[in-house]
Length: 63
Image (cartoon, rainbow, N blue to C red):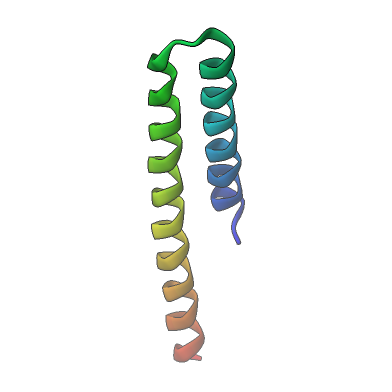
């Protein structure tokens, strides 16, 4: 797993956790946007991870 992918997962966890904590402490539903953005970031990380794996497999096949 590359450093960029690790950072994406860290960002995902931070954004979702921040959204949950802020929503729970303030009671304002606007912080649900943080949760949605975190989920979208996770989807991007999964897609990137699949592309990264595919690229590594292709390079290994060329050798």
